[in-house]
Length: 412
Ligand SMILES: *Cc1c(COP(=O)(O)O)cnc(C)c1O
Image (tube, rainbow, N blue to C red):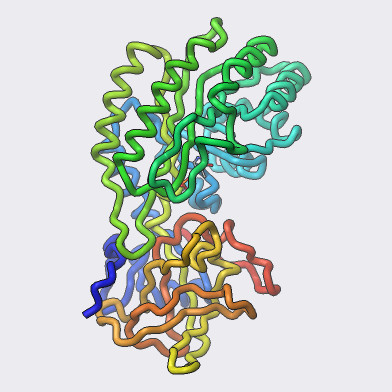
């Protein structure tokens, strides 16, 4: 027996007669309904349940935002709109998506290191909160406010002077293009005050894909403490209304990883809420989650086109590949390539019988979806499932590469 660590069980999905069910449908029936492979499918009931479970832990005062870039499928955005308190966007395109999905402008916030002049004007016209990341943005927003005769609602995105420990992707601490260094925040606040922008608070986002509740708690405590310190330099006129503590909640992708325990994070947030009522009586605490809300509810499904042996190794060649699922190929921020959890759609009950490498149709050795994994026997025509694919899938992949058609996405 191998002692290598296993993937966390993908027990969010049921199966019947050996076949995976999604949205209550056997996978092969869903594939027949869609009429083509590959496709992404997201289970709306799983997303609703994830949010319900998280809300049951979180203090009611904490606002839960969805980071749209994790999965901007319009049907999904519309499904999430009534379930979350707001949406975080990262471009003018996502602004349109969020507004189309029915999110109130008051509850939309915009972060990103390279906002264009057009995007900043659009944001002021829409009435959303802009997470300011440079002096240039302050000046453009002042122009937008004057031209449009509207308030420019801003919070300062802080590049904190600490890192999020154990994060899969660090986005704060040290030299970063994101946000304003903590040391430069007083100067930016002075500019915001001089430009008469509507200052509302602070935004922190130290990193992503973290499975350690202790590290997330540490970052949230340090962010809150930094907000208290920086608030001393805030424009005196308006009270602080919003402190966005970021997110970074991860999901288990790779062997040996376990699901994040949110209970201690929620307990820590309750402590911070109690402190906030003392020091920031008008502020709401916000967390913004992307993959944690949607990642586990989605699968990527492709079909085996060919089964080949090369030098004693079995290759399953599928119609899906890195052009549609870049993260599973390991080319979206992994240093050492690791396998996502994979299954053969109609053999959910069967133990693995062979070691195979799952590749896509592209003429590049990078097009590997899973390397030397143990699976039950699969033949040409079988459906292969890649789990944990509800976030950073279609829109995080170079779909036009090699001229393949775009992937289908459904919400079931
Ligand atoms: C990408 C991003 C998120 C979402 O990250 P996840 O890892 O999907 O939760 C949230 N906030 C900001 C500012 C981001 O850039």
